[in-house]
Image (cartoon, rainbow, N blue to C red; front, side, top):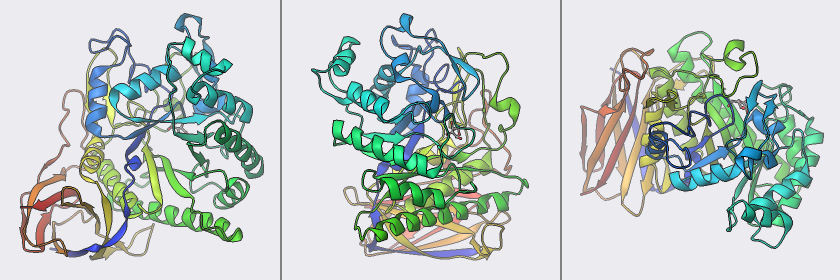
Length: 503
Ligand code: AHR
C-alpha cells in the first residue's frame, strides 16, 4: 500500500487566502440565466422570478463572487438593452451562441439576485463591438451616486443607490478568433489601457482584470500576456487565465495529471507579469484571476454549441459530471490554494446548467452535480491563510509531467477559530494510501472535527435528477490525531478534507 507524508508548520505561510477564488460565472448562454437562476412561473420563483431552489444551492455551494454577463456573449452585448422597463427591452440576435436574447434579465436583475443570494458581482465590459466610451458610460450608470444623466437614469429604473460594483473584466477572450471583435495583442492592449484609465477616473475604487489568453494552447500564448500587460500594466490589477480540462484518451490517471498543467500555467503567467514589472523596475505585482475554469469536453461538439433557428435559451453545453471530474475539480482547487499568493480570484464556469455544478429542469427539480461537492467543501473549510506543505509521496510518470505525485494536498489555517484543514487528493487508482501529517507548531491538544471524502468505485458515476446523491461526501473511516501526528487512510481515487481544531 502506498504511503505519503505531509509536514506543515504554523509559521511557514504562503499567503492569506483571498476568498474570491471561490467564484462562479453566470453568462447569458443556454439555460444559465433563463431556467437556471431566473424562471418566472417556476414553483420556487420569488416575486422577481429568481428560482429559490437554485438560490439555496448557490448559497450552499459557498460561491463568493459571480462573473456576469459573459463570456463570449459579452462581446456583442449592449448593456442599455438590459435596463429599464422590461416590456421596452429589445429582442436581439446573440451571435456568440446563435440564440435570441430577450433581455428580460439584465444588470439590475443580476444585482438584485446577487444581493439576495449574498455574492459579490463581477462585471465585464464589452470590448468586442464597443469601446472605452461605452465602458465609461456603463460604470457611470452603475457606480456614480447621482446628478448626471446616466446615474439619474439608474435611479429612474428604481435603483437610488449606486451598485458599487468593484471588480470589472476588460472584455472576454479577445485573442480568440471565435470572439465578436477579436483583436491582436497590440489592438487589445491599447483599448484595455484606455478603458481602464477612464473607468478608474469615474470610480477609482474599482479593480480591473485584463484578458489573458483564452487558453494555454493558443498560438499567441505568453507573447499575448506580455504585450497586453506592457500596454496596460499601470492601470490593471489582474490578468485573466482561462482553462477547461479535457480527457481525450479516456484515462483517469492522465486526466488527473492535468492538474500539473494548471500549476505550470499559473507559474508562467506570474513570470510574464513579473517580467513586465521588471522592465519598469516596478514593485507592483499583477495578480491572477482564473475567471473561467472547469472540466469541459463531453458536451463540446457542434450540436452542443449551437441549435438551429435562433431559439431562446436552448440547452447548450450541459456537461454531466462524473466521479473523476469531481476529483479533478477538487485537485485544481488545491492548486489554487497553494498559489494563494498570486491567484486572488477564480471563477468555476459556469454556475448552473452550462458546464455547471448545479443542474435544473425547467419547471422542475434542481440538483448537485458531482463537482458541486469538492467546491462546496473547500469553500466551507478553507479560511484564513494557506500554509506551505512539504509533501513526500510516490509518483507516476504522466504526459503532463515526468513525476506526478500520487498525493496532491494543501493546508489552510483559520487563526480566528484555530481550525487547521487538510485537503488531499489521492491519485493512486489501485490502492488506498496511508497518509501521515505532521502538524508542527499548532499546540498538540487538537482533535479531528470533520473528515469527509469524495469517492466512488466507478469513475464514470454521475448524479441525476432521479439519483442525486450517487457521488456525495461520505465520512473517512480511518482517521486519527495524536499530539501533532495525524493519520488517515485515503481510498484509491479519492478527494478528502480533514478539519482539525483545538480541543
Ligand atoms: O463558458 C463558456 C465559454 O467558454 C465562454 O463564453 C467563453 O468565454 C469560453 O470560451
